[in-house]
Image (cartoon, rainbow, N blue to C red; front, side):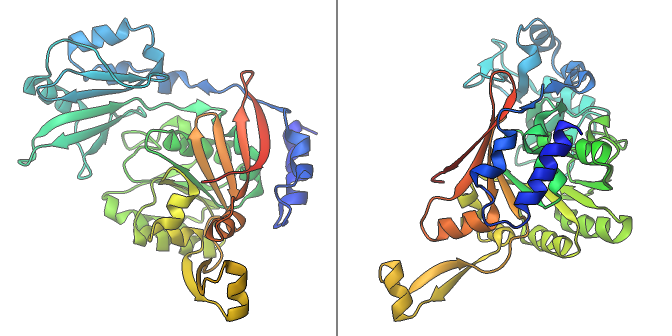
Length: 376
């Protein structure tokens, strides 16, 4: 029996709606036992297609840069010095001592091709993403060029949860790597766990530019979305027309998308989603996204019950079961906080610290699991 089948069977035995989900017994078999080397796909990591849209001198400077493999994004703003951001740096650095001209922006825009109504575009056949800044007249006056990568092994840290089959919402600030996680989960679920996976790809950020999905999502099927406002309709269409076992959707943010998630979950389809936020508490306080955590309602207590809440007659409680039984905070690439949604939300609403699992990779890339109570 493989290491994964052994640990997964243990997970199923002890985690299926077990109130002692975070007991020390459930994590002993996996502490320090999982080893994974996160590797970046050579094709996805090839930044030359992205460099082609840049001015020649910037391209030459970045090709000679010792940290080019850690390049995250390039910023081109009209009349300002171009900047680049590298993994591990605390900020951006200037990569030329002359300002960006309108001709250089026009060259880049033409090289990219069509930029959508959401001011996002891509380079066909790659995972790189381009976002435009426009003037009041609609002219492109700035570009954010982000390097897209496929990092194999990055989701090994929650592989047991993927095998468990419950829906998961990933929470993280912009740029922390949520889309990279969605991409690798698509591959793992479709190729390794043999699920029927449909990716709802609103801006082609998960499956890459062009009409042919990038190999980084494995054998998952991709449904592109013509307008961001149509994402919720494509989510429902995916379920009704293509019989998926798993739906993957990035950046859930609107009320319509939340309702679509609730509808899909009720049909027995596993959902993998992401939302902007730094902590679970951000989701609870968001009047739209809080419904994914079960919704929040105010309850009036009787006198006897109020004595247990420091005399408060009105308290907040979870209104119902969460759409996503698990919510995961991506603190950084190698540190994730795992919440059993019902338990954590109830604790936070009572003003208590939720009990969680903190999963990290050490210097040898072993997955270390710690149980503790944290304050969001």
